[in-house]
Length: 128
Image (cartoon, rainbow, N blue to C red; front, side, top):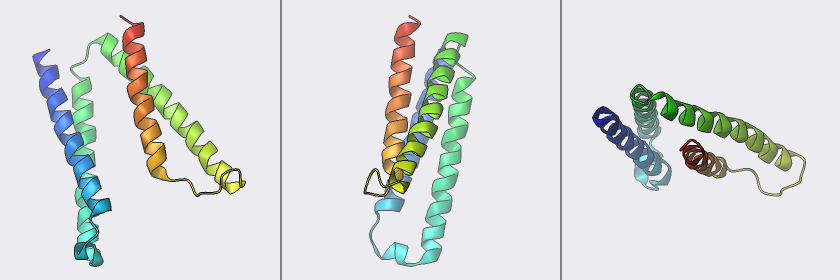
């Protein structure tokens, strides 16, 4: 349990670093991004921080018991399935003129985040 808490904190740190680097990269409206070299460096840094976050998540799974793994895998399966179905429906809705504004990836990311959190909460309560 102590190792699991340690790896959870590591994952939280990597996640925070990735979100912060993404926010800086996408929100930094300054002269820094006028130079394509700085933009490319920022993208590469964000990419590698994201890889660190993925590795930290994988390492955390090594410290889960079987029930925790089951809860996580079910939440991930539901999230992946809904992300594909909802994401494609969202995109096709624009292509066919059902919605007027072009789909924004940020909305799909929010949907994925809420789906994953909700799935974890529901599965955790279901298996108690």
